Length: 302
Image (cartoon, rainbow, N blue to C red; front, side):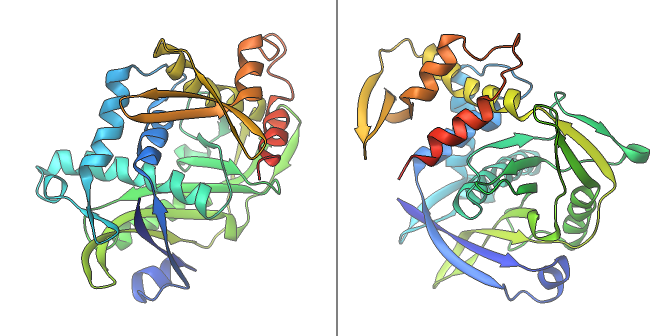
């Protein structure tokens, strides 16, 4: 399992004018993470992705990096690709980086795509919303915008555009509970995938976390119960499509269903899988309380 380098910047000015990060660390990312997040990123518009699509999404990010001295570094196939292909890979790496940081740094295990048509919003003069919304274990809402490049950092103009998208959002209403969320300055993040020297190694995969300043105006609505169900439906639909019998495994008193496909292992909590297959949560009851149900089960994991 190789590592990536993570750096946090307190504002877009710190990122553009002063390259010294406020926080810095490295952590491991498995090849399994590439596939797991690829499935979730590919499940857009509530459509099931095929095995070929899963291979496409995960292989694109896997192809972008290679292993060197315990880190992921940029591959020749990515660095020297034709410009249009390179841009597509950069986009995918930015999306992958965002899911990794949301989980690893901000304890957010579910991200929802803001540009999905399931979201309702009052967009002022055509203003754009950011890529992602997520809620941590303390029910603090986070907004993320994903960016990617094969260079040392993302351009200032790109960061400024991302800042505008993040700062457009002033509030989010959860229509399943009528709870209002008001994103704060420290919960809006531009996540940048890029490649720079680190620890004596050239072109290491770096993930930059930029925290821009500003207040928002756009009011958005989301049904967290439904979005949470659809989030897991992406995974459940995929493993069901493998047409394999799951294996039962126990880890620290938690029971999981697991599938192995092409040397990759996919697991889900037994109770969450069974609840989805039971029909207990459905369109008729608007998936009521599914989000809380899942959060309770996840909180039991040591």
